[in-house]
Amino acid sequence: MKPYASSLDDMMGEAAFDVLAKAKALEKKGRSVLHFEIGEPDFDTPKEIVNAAKHALDEGFTHYVGFDGIQELKDAVCEHVNECLGYEPSTDQVIILPGVKPGIFFSMLALVNKGDEVIYPNPGFPTYLSLIRYLGAKDVPIYLNERNDFEMRADEIENKISAKTKLIIINSPHNPTGGVCSKKGLEEISAIAAERGTWILSDEIYSNMVYEGKHFSVSEVDQARERTILIDGFSKSYAMTGWRLGWLVGPKRLVERMRLLPLNALSCTSSFTQRAGIEALSNSEVKGWMKSMLDTFRKRRDTIVKGLNSIEGFKCHLPKGAFYAYPNVRKTGMKSGEISDLLLNRLGVATLPGTAFGEGGEGHLRFSYASSLEVLREAIGRMKKAFNE
Image 1 (cartoon, one colour):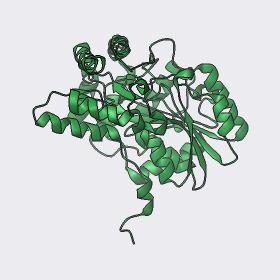
Image 2 (tube, rainbow, N blue to C red):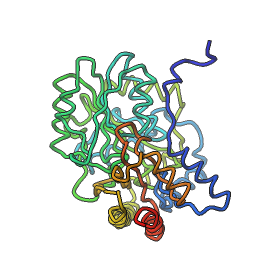
Image 3 (cartoon, rainbow, N blue to C red):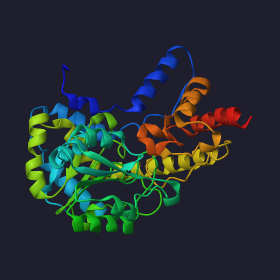
């Protein structure tokens, strides 16, 4: 008999942290490694946000708070959603959480039963598949490709949805491809879900990182009142990965029951980080900083895509959002894992194989271009020397 629950056998890790550990080990041996494996902005958290947390600490705001979030931050989230998406949820639709991952986890715990089917993007954020299998559900992948700009398409969902489909997971802008779903496409997906009585979980952690046009959320269709759960947070847009702060907006009837999950699992989200979150959402200086960061990422995107397309056997689609380049490397004649290992061990360039995000990622690599232009150019130079010569 196993000493632990057998369901843990179905839970998976994340290759990004495995590759990071290998890269750090090489650096300890004196190797020069350029890091493109971790999906983390290389910017410091804006000082206005940091100072808000310091002030909260100085005030002694370090005790338990409401298990679903402080009222002021829930109010700020509602105002933010109204400003960005055009509808204002009520605060009883909101739960404040320590990051986006708990929002994904709690939503799936609240909705998915053993034997249910869950439609999700493949390649996709590894947590989706890990939790589907952990809950004993059947994973139903929608394979993303360059032909469709890595967009999760309604017609493909229509072909795979069934009477057992409980949930459709959407991630736009998308990790690892940088793809962005169109307004029309998301409206079509929402219509399918409404017709079939299926829930939608929309992971929008990169919502403020769209390079052309405006971000559209599938939650705008039903204003997160009927079947859509919107999850977003502070990690990427505000360079707050270590702060662990996010939010969930969903239908009242679901949120009322879901609130019991953070109560039982967390007691509450850190009090003083929530004060920092209020500052992040309301400070005009922070909004200006975010625009500047996006402009920097746009320059990096253009640089790395151009550079990758100059390497023999590489072909890179221009990402529309997030901060990931996702080149097709099939013409090298090598598997994704082989190339990723070669880049790290021979060239000192740490990337992730596309298969770190599911079998649909074979033939691709993911580069997180959260690095300076100088580092990007150095990496391209190392790869061109190896592949072009």
